[in-house]
Length: 297
Length: 297
Image (cartoon, rainbow over all chains, first blue to last red):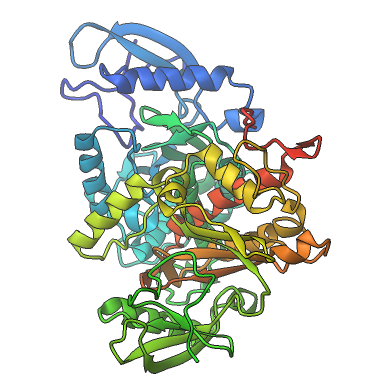
């Protein structure tokens, strides 16, 4: 009944006897509750989100639906363990292409322990978090459903991209020729259908941005933007990409104490700028040339 | 010929034989060039700003005019020393009210030395920079031009404000009853004329924000927003506040390397939210009640 999620691209993964999330066939995602305060913080966040009238309806849809907690047999064989029951946000996709982007140049709450802050600060400095305001935690793209081949860059590579390489990865994420060799420029064939349009990724991020400019409820440390779309249908000529943005991972959400989440907002704006650039890049000879452009305007 | 600036509220001040900025009667502000790379960085920034065609004209006016460098007798008696010659942004005011707000939750460039980073990080954590995304570095408000009395809170107090206290200070900055005792609610009499209106502080900050959402030229670490207005004329019933925003202090500006300045932008958005809140707070019985409100929307 419970399976290891095929499309999880970041975080602990339930394989080789490790504790990680599980899914079922009914569209549920079971996330092991961490024993320490991270588990209780994540429950507290979802509970607060569900009941807080200050969270507008148009914003709620950016969060996975929360279905309570349940004890199920954990993936590490340790027997019945409490899990968060969440909406499996990719369950409705035939073959989801997924990118996990951890937002914010700082992943630590000022109230965290010194040892935790030290660990996070080191990671933030060693990754693109500090320079770009976000780091790509994982990415998986099904390049062919026939033979189930995927493009899945290594995590170390993804997490420490310079600006030009981040643009390149974001461009390849929405290109039809990603399977070709590395020297071929990404064609950005799907950019307008995935990133663009009235219901595309950019519009969704801009809607979130508007909320982050005013919300003084939560500060989201170490939270990710998950970008999902149905690549296979676009390859077959469909005009609908099913592109969605979801926010995930709330083990480090803190009370906003009266200020907006300037750390998350700054990183979100940086991501928005990159995605706008990919979208607006002039296309020459069918080749998207944004990532090698030296112009800055 | 050279004088100690009366309205400087932050940074090293030229008194008691200390090295600090000087002004003259022609509207020039002479800032001692720091010997280390800070001095050369600030010159490089002003030179680049003057000549870079990517900086739009509407944005240039937020920076003091740069008039080169000049050797003048330093305020510490050390003889002729090189100084930056800048526009004295308060020289045209009869009696300027000034607030200096250091923007960004992080005041250090990732490329800085370890010891400098450590020092800044400590200060950022001990101040409101980390929590609010900015810290008020100084504030001086002439409450009566007759006897030259001023309201000038201590720096330690200003730099570590919680959200509610930051709202209170920003409210008092635009209130007529600031001279009264601390228990009296600020009336926010001047809020609409200083923070509001088509040429008020909020609109200026929003124009800057638009630029920061797209500019990938500079990262401004440890840079301040200076807010200036003519309080005395408002006290006398004038409708013009002369409110202006200027960006100052560029000794830690770094190359953006392809990403927006998410750190500055986040802090700027946080300040914008506070100023919007002061402006939008309902006024009851002529008393501005925003700062003691517990509501969050």
